[in-house]
Length: 248
Image 1 (cartoon, rainbow, N blue to C red):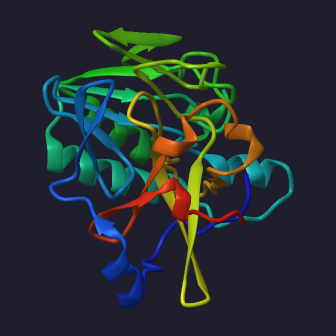
Image 2: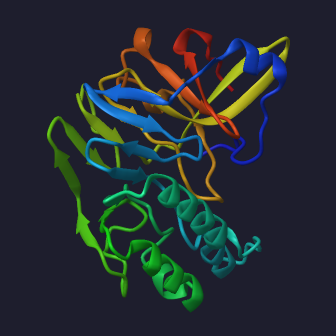
Image 3: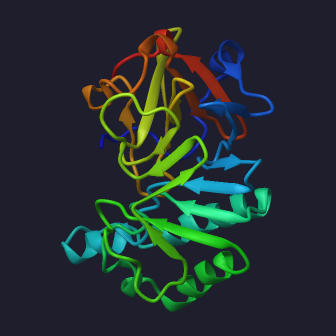
């Protein structure tokens, strides 16, 4: 993934005025109402289901094992954000859509206080770990169910987008981001990418980057004439039509 911005508010007044704020935040995926939370989570109100993707917990400690020194607080920052969206939406079900941990040994490296905090967030609700390419095995020592994918009415939740047209698919893996140019200034943000039929989730983890939705990796996933990037602002989500997006 490239190094597109993940945190902080990069929007200037000119962008905020020209982009369309998504209010109250509701979109539809294959006809199913969904709320794009500006923190990078998707809430399905009819099901009281919260979807997050690509937390990559313990990515910092994985890098340290390889001799790359990164600040060791990515897991704590991600748990803080996860706690905030759970408090905001009070979901009955939480689906972590793959790459929840950066590798299969991540749960064992997580400091006990942080494991306890995660367990408290899980308590009292159904929790599903969808297997990802970084963490194909169930997270050792943690509760919750494990699945390769989940079917919910017209929706299919999986980690990696399937090839070709997949109506109702909600996936992660690609860490979508988008770029627009306003008055000669480029603005890059993580985003939800959708054409109304399927949706690719932004990465939720504190140490995750983003891949521009115009990259060839997305070829064939969306009807380009209907592509919309729902770019994450500090307090709102901004709907930007695909024709306004730029590579980079």
